[in-house]
Length: 265
Length: 265
Image (tube, rainbow over the protein chains, first blue to last red):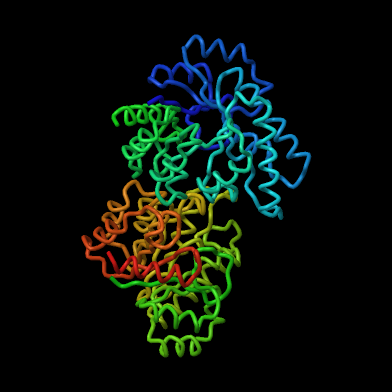
């Protein structure tokens, strides 16, 4: 099992990112703890000095496995389903820049809250149409870069809460480089059976996030991670299992406990 | 095990109330399905014609076991922790009218979202102080009526997410008629161990809500309700187990499935 953990390239108000400041120090710490890779939350790919980043990664022999894009919505309020066409265009252009960065880093691009939250007087049909067009255009920017769409629980968005919702959208996008990210924290709220959903996702499962039921590190809540790992083994999942967790009780302890616990399974 | 289910006396935008319209018809349906009691969501106790309500209850031989007060916040924006003292006073006065109605119906009064959501520039110390004073005043209105404070998940409020949070507040209120309502849907998100939390709540547990992990009827998600029932048996819980669930796939089916499933355990 390849283990990853999320870190942020820029400060953020999003709570489920354990490593927020001091990228160089954090990359070193993540490597030292034994992680196989890191997810990078990036707001402005074009503003990121790739030489600087690559030097840090090379020095620490750590790869970026995935790019998080949620900050694009959380900080800059851009989304694929905003009623304003200018905002939708900006969202698509921004994510295409993530795709180009993903190509350079050999990382997949996560489609989380950049899809928007719903509401705003937009019908679900219209919303889906915009979302599907946006995913096609972003995925078409470079078909060698994979996009992983994440079902997110009902409190954070109305759009794609469950694996079933996600499979419907994927069926309409119908591109091989667009797949699924399943997150155990969201699954615990939305999926009827977490193990069955992983099984149902098998043909499109690009990435997995782990957090316990309370979004703390695995082992801090009541999710049965042995069953999760067994379900992933059963479908011969070869991707990363990456911790997107609250920085509680503190970032380093959370990262330590995660790897200890996941390795023990 | 005594089973209850929520119904609303007035229309509401709150989603987890299966029976919303036509009180008389709903009371009859609930009785017919085999429930032992109903929870009533009431916005304005003073506007409720008690003779009319009592006649419906008598005719159907059904008791109101608990009064829900969340509409006071959801519809009228009143809360115990609002920075505006006029709003806090209105919230307290309203809940005191629920206490008086609770006395007449022999029903406990649920303290849910009327505590407020947090934020609004109020410190947690100030908030707790207002909350504790409000609970004392409401509980003092009639000490023979029980108030049940419900831990609610982080997405709905910042105030009292876990049993531990609730026990801290209860310790400061220190009144025998103020206790706890545990809801399995919220517990699934917030409690490290649902069964251990029920055990820890035992000395103050006045009321229990059941909904599955996805807030559908019990059996529609992945909560182990056998373990929940066993945990309640272990602490010799004598109160009601009441369904606060989404009206999915429709109100009657949800109510039918709930009672079938809970009776089967």
